[in-house]
Amino acid sequence: MVIAAAKQSRIRHPLFARIYPKINAFAEAHGALEHRAELLAGVTGRVMEIGAGTGANFSHYPPRVEQVIAVEPESRLRKVAERAAADAPVPVEVRAGRAEALPMPDESVDAVVVSLVLCSIADTPQALKEAARVLRPGGHLHFYEHTRATDRRLARRQRILNVAWPLLAGGCSLVKDPERAIADSGFVIEKARHFDFLINGRTTPSSPCVIGVARKG
Ligand SMILES: C[S@@+](CC[C@H](N)C(=O)[O-])C[C@H]1O[C@@H](n2cnc3c(N)ncnc32)[C@H](O)[C@@H]1O
Image (cartoon, rainbow, N blue to C red; front, side, top):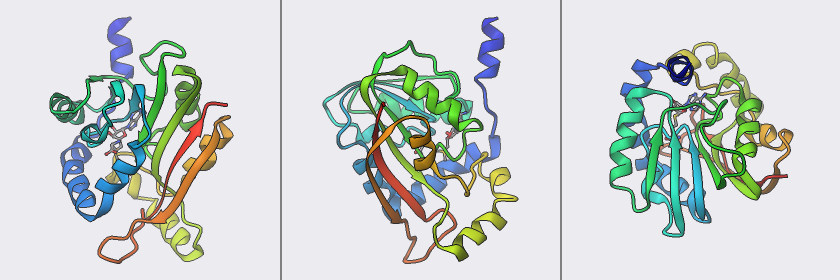
C-alpha cells in the first residue's frame, strides 16, 4: 500500500529535470529572482510549497516564515531541492508527493505557494482543491505563473507551440489560465499583477505572467 502510494506520487521527466536548473538560472538572470521575491514577500507562518522544482524559492522566504514543507514529485529535481533546503534561511522540509494528493492534514498550513507549476499539473482543479484543504480558514495561496496570452497573435502562437511544448517542458502547457482556475476553485483573488516577462526586451511564448495572492473562500 505504502509502495503504491509512493509510486503514485512519482513523476518522471528525466530530460526536463536535467535542463530545468539551467533554464531557471537563465530566467533568474533576466528578472525571475525579483519575481520570486515579490511572490514571497508577505508569506508568514507554516507554508506548503507545491512542485518546488530545484528549490529556487527557498532562499526568498522571509524570516517570519516558521517552516516550509515543500512537495516535489520528480526525484532528480527533489534531490536538488534538498540541497537548496539545507542552505535556506528558514526551516525547509522537502517531501515526495504531488499536488493532487498533498501529504498534509486538513487546515494545517497558513499559506500555500505555487510558482510556475499550475501549468504542469495534470489535474489543476484537484490540485487547487487540495491547496484549499490544507490551508487554514482565511489562509492564502501565493502564486507566480505564466498564463495564456490576451494578445491574439501571441495566443495563436502559444496554441501552435503547445502541440509539442508539454513534451519538451515537463508537461508544461502554454494555454492555461491559472488565475481563472484559482478563482473557479473558490479562492478570492486579493491581488494579481499581470506583466510580460520579457527576455532581453523580447516576448517569449511564456512571457504573459501573473503574480498574486488569493484567500481561501
Ligand atoms: C517549471 S517547474 C517549476 C519549479 C519551481 N516551482 C520553480 O518555481 O522553479 C514545474 C514543477 O512542477 C512539478 N510538477 C509537475 N507536476 C506536478 C504535480 N502533479 N504535483 C506537484 N508538482 C508537479 C515538476 O516536477 C516541476 O518541479
